[in-house]
Amino acid sequence: MQSRKLKRRHFLGLMAGAIPAMAGTDAWLVEPEWLAIRRLRLGSGPVWHRFVHFTDVHFRGDVDYLNRVVAQINRLAPDFACFTGDLVEEAEFFEPAVEILRGIRAPLFGIPGNHDHWSGADFGVARRAFAANGGAWLQNQQVLLAEGRIVLTGADRLPCPVIARPESFNLLLMHYPLWAEFLQGVRADLLLAGHSHGGQVRIPGIGALIKPSLTGRYDLGAFETPAGQLYVNPGIGTFHLNVRFNCRPELTVFELGSPPYRLPAADIAA
Image (cartoon, rainbow, N blue to C red; front, side, top):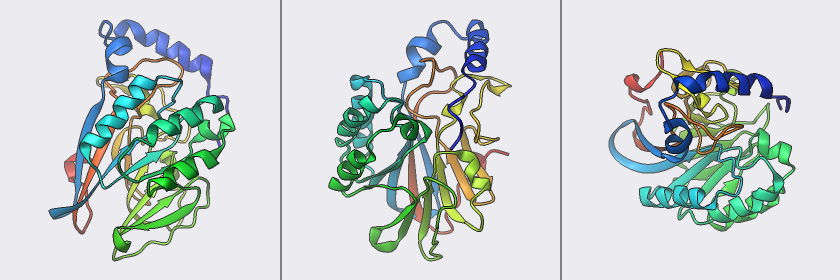
């Protein structure tokens, strides 16, 4: 687990320096809650399963916003939803956030992030709530979905045991994108991660101004990695400063067709 010392002073200094380049009030008042929907297709032919990925809520009591996120997930009507960590920064907000997520009308599968661990929150709250709706709070655990056609693994620490099924769609949830280079001997059809927030502030032609440790080059979008195709979601919430520029919060919808489960080449970063 990375150190709590996330270079706060360095982060704030870079963000403050970038503020003059931001377009008016967009970064402060519009983008932080301007939810984007991105749809990605894996495989060809008829769609037989759909799921939604979201991450990095960083819930601090902003009930209205998280309720809107849940409502949008329900409008997308996925077969299940995936969450890849950092629900909160402080333990007092963990149970209220989980209670709002109970409103998702689909099984929810999630893992903790570094801030969830640092908060000291009672993960039993999430285990009970997620299980009640057919999902699971996974800490180095694996479940079978869709009558075994989907193998879902939640990685909370390394090494993480992964048993892939060649005949199934193998999906792996992790918080840190760079773990895709540390999963020795693992090959998945799709890895999902968060943690980076997409940088929160992305300058055209430059990209993210700041990248947390254990992000590497995998800051936003789809990548090829040693462990398989990786998608890094920019998150729902913000960290340190409630600001986003050229980096909207996102719900990512994945649709599964027939194998091989490949993302279109145009969607994968060079």
